[in-house]
Length: 512
Image 1 (spheres, rainbow, N blue to C red):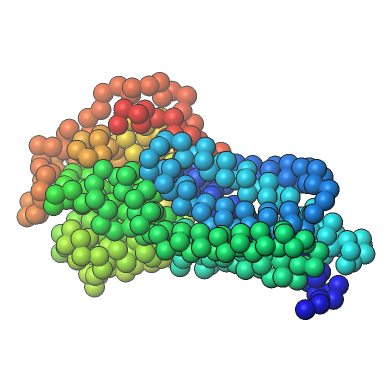
Image 2 (cartoon, helix red, strand yellow; image 1 turned 135 degrees about the vertical axis):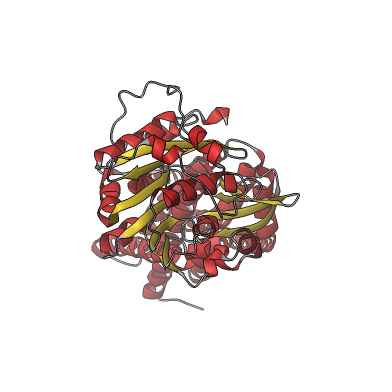
């Protein structure tokens, strides 16, 4: 079948459009994986995108070395790109499971994919030179690639990550790229030698088989890569729009991990949740309207509902999947005593900062049970601006408490939270406890008015079904020695001057 110049040019543009889609999605996949495996999402996205753009520049430079059979080299580039895009996440997961150099592999994949995309655009421009005049050629080629990038970004954000996950999204994009490049191969076949046609046809079959095989075995391979990294058996694993949630089991106990960081263990979570809930609850006699930011596992809400006079609890979590886990997953329903389905509880799927900005409610107690501030995104929820919002929404005699990481593993981060709360107008009471599976962990309790420590130490826990907390334990929760590092120069954490996540990442986590 003979194709017109217009049809040949169209096929080339469709191929560039598909490349734009798969290329940008590959960037986002690798950036997301890097943020999960290495941490610090903003840094990883910045590095991956920068590295890939640099590699595209190198690819464009290298393209001038190919002077003959440009169509053949273009198709070969498409074939290799289809394979790399398809297997990018799979390779990263396997390496993550068996070595500590997953970061290096992710960066190498970024360079390779960037080089291939950088080769394609000059190749396509030179091929299309026979079908369109220069004025239209360059603008049309770049236009299709950039438009593809937009569609790819929308696909990743609204379809790929939330529905297909990082396991299957790469293969869908790899197959798309392969299919479109095969269409281009058929349209431009007349420009390719008979010998090269046979080799390319065999290559297409082999690549198709390889991608389909990868698609078939992807899930068990990813499970293997994850399982190697966790010492206990994985019983639940889900990639949500916002995070990777994993639940493991050892004997009869379960542990919750978010992005590879342990959040709790059913073995001793009460040593975390009981001090965090019952000291502020006892400090204020009014428990009518309570706000929980985070805490989607429901354990904190379980402790709150031990007070019968509680009338209303609002739990805000960014990730609906985490809320559903606390509500419906049998392990957590049993652990939290079905607290997430209590009729007094209202769940809100929202960013905590935005929720506080918009709510007109004022609360007796505000609990902040969010993941550690190990990146800029979470850092926002530990800032002076955020704490001022909390103070505004807290009743005059209300109590605020936030988890604050470890006063020993991340000493500067702990005292930065304390200093930031004071800068927001709060009176603070630092607390800590030895949680066996987490190590020494801390909270900062805060009020609008001064509270004497003797008042807290005299708290009595009567008529409460508690597993660990006793009256005698309270003074120990409030007692601190000298900080392990010099804390005199610690800065206040703000949105425009984020310091906390840097302090956190500089902690002594290797001792943990």
